[in-house]
Image (cartoon, rainbow, N blue to C red; front, side, top):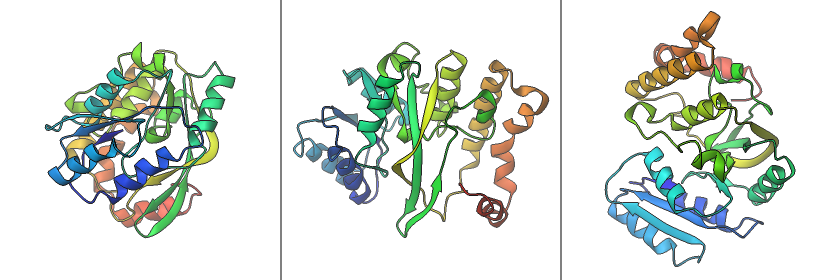
Length: 261
């Protein structure tokens, strides 16, 4: 878990507790403090006293999620690596079920799952992902929900980990999933809801324009490598930029006509 917090620690406390109460209990919980505010940083340091499985590392400087996760990977010793964000909730059997799946299906290098969506007002939807993503599933958006994913250790270590560059800010997950796909690694989404994904419905479609440009560049590079640019892939490269000019209410209208977000 990479943490960059300058707000209330309540969400972080809830996220941490959801990991500590997993039915599968033999794990190390590595948390990287990525330059949080003094109050949050103090809270994070105190977490190690809560449970001996928690390992706190970090820096006073903010370096971004990809950098934080790579530092966690350097510290990790397990055969499997599970992702978690600091404002989400892992349901109690998440680790148990994902670990069982990967042990029973050696053909897969990582797996994710489906998730309920919630914010401070409560649960407001369910988001699903394709069970067996194909190249075309990467056109619209990432076919994996990043904080739900559990990897085999070698899938990350032998393939360079996360790409910590300016152009991957806010889309480091999309980049690594496309890169692993290009390298021939296989991912699967368990068709079970094992996660609660924190998404504020009021800001769901808002994003700084520069991050949309970064994503467009990541899409172009990887779509080219994946042979997806033609006939329609080039248009999907512009999807994040075009989205900045579409009224939120119109987006919500089409979203609400579908069963998932």
